[in-house]
Amino acid sequence: DRSVKIAPSILSADFANFGAEIRAIEGQGADWVHVDVMDGHFVPNLTFGPPAVKAFRRHVKTVMDVHLMIAPVDPFIEAYAEAGADILTAHVEAGPHIHRTLQAIRGAGMKAGVALNPGTPAEAVAHLLDLAGLVCVMTVNPGFGGQTFIDMTAKIRTLRAMIGDRPVHIEVDGGVDPATAPVVVDAGADVLVAGSAVFRGGSVDKAEIYGQNIRAI
Ligand code: DX5
Ligand code: ZN
Image 1 (cartoon, rainbow, N blue to C red):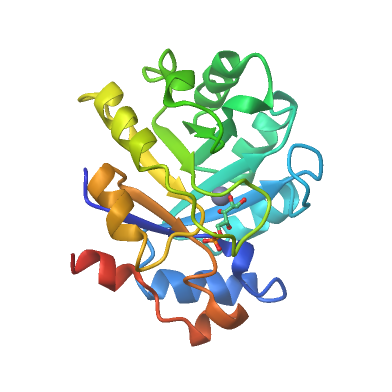
Image 2 (cartoon, rainbow, N blue to C red):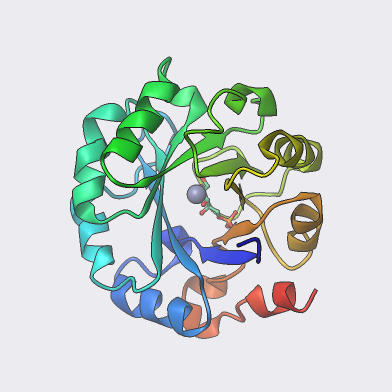
C-alpha cells in the first residue's frame, strides 16, 4: 500500500535502553524500526552488528528495516537473516555486484533494498527494480544522524517514474523532519526515516513524534 510509513532510526536512540526506546516509538505509531549498521569502512562511523540486531528483534513488533552501510555486504547477509531483519538494504556503491547481493538477500528470505548516496544518480538502480522491494534515497551523506537535509527531490521524482506500478517503496533517509517530510512525500516517497527529529534530546521520552504531522498532510 502507498500510505506513508514512518521508520524512526534507533541510531538517535539512547544506546543503553534500546528495548524501551523501541517500545516507545512503536507505542507512538512507528510503522517500521530503522536500524543503521555502519562498519567504519564504507562510512566513517561504527554502530552495531548481527548480535545486537538480533537482540533488537526481541523488541520490534512491527517491521525491522536494516540499512547496511558496510562493504562488503555478501558475507553478512545470512547473519542478518538469522538476526531477524525483514528488509535488508545494501548500498549500490558498496561493491561491483549489487545485483548478486540483492538476489542473495531475497534468497535468504528478506525484502531487498538498495540505497543511493546523494552523488549517485537514479539510473544506477534501473536494472534492479524487479529485484528490489525498496529504494532508499539518501538525503545526507551516510554515517551520522543529525545532518542537514540535501534536496534530492528530482531524483525521487525520476525514481517514482522509473518504478511505474512495480511494488517498490521509495524510502528517504537523512534530515527528514516536519519541514522536509512533505517535500519528499510530494515527490513520491512513501517511507520516511527519521532519527534526530524523533529522538530529540536523546530519548523518545522527550520526542514529539512528527509522524502525526505527516499523516495530517
Ligand atoms: C545516516 C543514517 C540515517 C540517520 C538519519 O547515515 O542512515 O538513518 O540515522 O538521522 P537523521 O534523521 O537525524 O538525519
Ligand atoms: Zn539509515
